[in-house]
Image 1 (cartoon, rainbow, N blue to C red):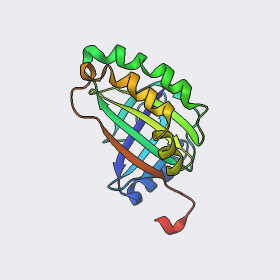
Image 2 (cartoon, rainbow, N blue to C red):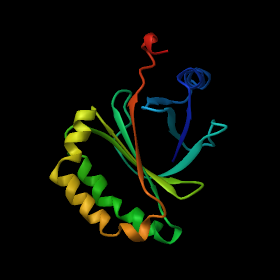
Image 3 (cartoon, one colour):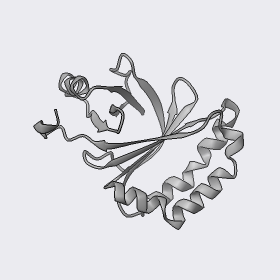
Image 4 (cartoon, one colour):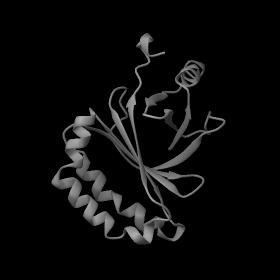
Length: 169
């Protein structure tokens, strides 16, 4: 299964959702961009998008919620180690309050993986980030960090866009 995404204006991305009603395309609004995201096993519909192999997943993407996408550039030789380090982290998320979905996305082109998590609210995400479970996961993960990273990881956050709310367009 693959994940496909692209950035654009809300109007442009909304028109894509109307054109491709056979797909469940989620629109996500961030501070500096709007993102369209969907999952399937076919070639992407986006002319200027990015596609990823979904290596690990838990939960279903919801129409409402808060999305955190950690973008992590990983060197080719470190990819197998990086990928296996997420099995335990993903399993621990399932019991966290407000958790909705997890995806470990491996780029089909390039070296920047995305760790996507969806939460019922930003408050739930922040509570998890401030928890002992998050600290323990980070400790295990960062112990190997220097061998993985080619560049500095970065975070994008989004709120799910409500397609039914005409005031948003």
